[in-house]
Figure: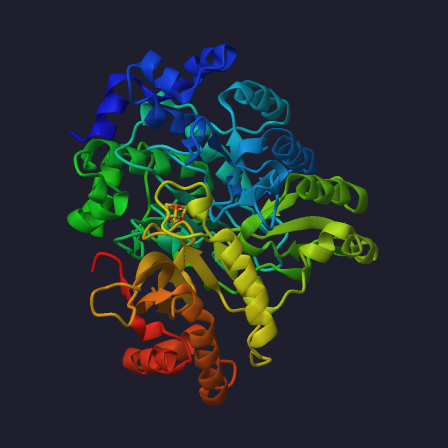
Amino acid sequence: MNTTEQHKQEKHPLDVIEDLQSYAEEGLSFEEIEARAGGGEWERLKWAGMYTQKQDDFFMVRTKVPGGYLTPEQAEVIGQAATDFAVAPEEFGGEEQNELWGDAYLDITTRQDVQKHWIRVEDVPELWERYEDVGLTTIQGCGDSARNVLGCPAAGIDEEECFDAQPVIDAVTDFFTGNREYANLPRKFKMTITGCVHDCGQSQINDVGLVPARKELEGEHYYGFHARVGGGLSDGPRMASELDVFVLPEHAVEFCRAVAQVFKELGDRHNRGVCRLRYLVEQMGPETFEEAVRARCTVDLPTAGEGLTVGYRGDHVGVHDQKQPGLQYVGFNVIAGRMGGEEFAEAARAAKKYGTEETSIRLATDQNFLITHVPEENVEALLAEPFAQEYSPNPGPFSRGAVGCTGNEFCNYAIIETKQRTKRWARELDERIDVPDDVEVVRMHMSGCSASCAQPQIADIGFRGETVKLIGDATDGEGDELVEGMDVGLGGSLGTDNEFIDWIETAVPHHGVIPALERLFEVFAEEKHEDEPFYAWCRRVENDQLREIMQRADAPVARGVAHGD
Ligand code: SF4
């Protein structure tokens, strides 16, 4: 049994939630918490939605937002809490802690969560009280249990959806949150549920994906779901496998429970490197896995019907008509997902001011957010608000597709800085590169290590952090220099033509990347077919040729070697 598993067996991870109250009342340091608990509490605190950050005694706290759906009141509470609690102490720079954002900011994540940094354990009970008042939680935001359930950020308003799956997302969330039976799984368990044909909830890369389908049962036509299982990214990326089942919306909770039961019983608890559900699906094969689910499911699962998924259409940035006549939604672009707590609260207040009673804030998996149910005549005034100038619904193509993980500012695993770099590069690339008019977005995703929090494998351009040794002229190594750099991958996408990225060039020093991209986009503009996105061109061109184009750039791309190679 590995150490993490041992910590989970010694004390049920959900018990940490009650204990946290006393840690907070006594204002215990992290070391004192560990001593009081007898070790392993840092692992169990994940079930409270808390991760240790690089700086001792401060935490990252993750708020779950099922389906990315927030009422304006909830969004305002989240923004205000960032302003009040996500405050960097003076010894770490205070308000100047981060050159671009200062402090008191929040991060919208690729799983429709909100992350805040610099949280002290003594502030958590008050944060929870404020959350409880508006129906928010951080419980099981992290840890080996059911994580935030994803959905389409335009559920209930998109003109092309088959049905609104948000009530199903909420029911599945309610079932798993605080459920001791399923709170200690072999590893994290990620679900996504959508009733829309465009699958913006990314069913191909989740442990369980429910996507819309239709089936005739006893002479009646029903909408429900088809099920995909075993998708995921990180070191062993895998597209999910389709099961031969049709799941009625009222059976979705039971279906997800049965999958969790299979994972709980048969998943590997020894080697954390291969504990995720995708390894179990791969090992058993989708057919045997399906039999195991059917055997544990208390409802009948008919065989699959007619799948209705068309595939990813693109993001929700910009002004769009809703299916409700006279109403529009606006997708705002948040580069790398980071914005000030006060700005987020401002957006929430604007949503209330210009929207209707149904208005909501929706978080998207590309780290952007939407304000929904805005009467057409109010859209202009909403767009004139100060926050809308910085988080424009009409950004350049690189800004529009820029996603960044936490990086070495806070993350213990990170090799490089990511958030500031993602924002600076996106803005710089929008200035320097004249992207062809028929390319609205270039998805550029930056992860600070080989984990996939920024989902580089599904981007046009993906980065994962590396330390790079620049070789100097001296033969004795004097003059060699270690710099931040990255592996560069090209050609990933999700949708009708799913494919993971190919890692084209390794250990590119950070200063070599923009010149290399400029050269690639020059050739792309010359060679592309009409309406051909960048990822599709990258797939059409041989990898050796892409590498050669990148190395043609006037930058030391070829001179770096990964540290330790
Ligand atoms: Fe940290 Fe790596 Fe995840 Fe980035 S991708 S947040 S560096 S673990």
